[in-house]
Image (cartoon, rainbow, N blue to C red; front, side, top):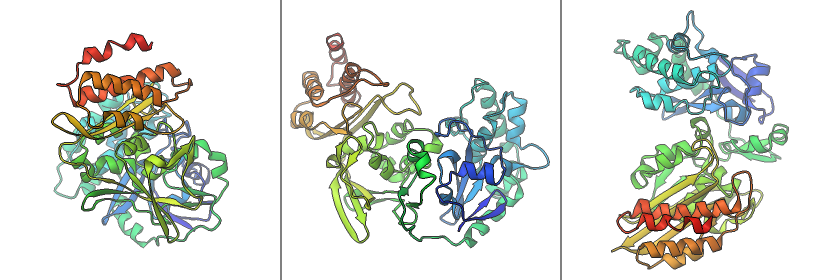
Length: 474
């Protein structure tokens, strides 16, 4: 039995756990404010908030309900746009109306939900961050100016509300949310969390952000088990000399992790290119790895860092370097009943250099045409350790072994970098597809390798000399 809170109502259902939450909300509960748009997590019309107890408090995340299995709502608070219904419009709804932030109205519920989620999660409101929280919502009518004005106006309304009470109380007092939100924490505590493994499960679902896009019809008609049932770790920890990331950790958790920020401060900028906030809130690191996309961003980064994958099946465990994990297009070294428990890598030495580059048809919300990551330890301008990966140029996320062998122990110079790029071009086997021709991808990889060194070692690299060979490749 799946049990959760839907807005202000307790829900118990024996519906198939793989049922898409969007369909359950609209068809079973008749809450049609949540719209069905792309069904691929791109448009944001189906956005809901998912509340979960974290360290004794309810933490809300914006989610694409079109990609979420009903079973994963167990023990949580599902918030649709109807949750905010009161005697009058909320300040956010009123601001959208008054500032011309809606025209056809189809996308508006998603914007209201995402914007309200930002206010619920942040006591200190920052305009740019509030706007970024809407990155998973698309509007084809307004040009967004009216929506941005509505965000500004809503922030002013909240800040003008004088209250000495808690953040939640202040939101209720200012009519951003109804008063029943105060009781949600106690209601969630009472729901018994299920951890029983589903017998005969065909699918194992963690985030579902790609599984429901690629295999929707098969998934919704099958039994599935969930990462929460297997108690896959969803934390990031530091041991003496390694960083350990649980398989169920989401991309957004990585982006927000103090441990990751300490050692990899550019990760936040890099992972914001992974996808929209609702996707990052669900997509997991293990899912990204097992997906085996030749242009997966996280796998690309982890290959450069020489990460290890720790697999588990029952009581049996084994470890494999991620550089050996990919055997062919969508083929990985994983047995049917195994799942990724941890991803670990050595904490780099002080003063290391790291850079991630990605080129895609759309800067945001799109898979790369080509991506690449470099990790370098250097002493007196001499490379002492290096990891270099490339995506979109082979059937698998590729470790550029020969290029790394050449660069190791070399002085960092323009000539060395140009020769390394030529070696890399001999290691790859790109194909022409919708994301670019094979020759275009070769050009991109070479330019990304140049970009790595220009960004990390601007004093040692002659940028003009690097770009001067572009016509030869074309």
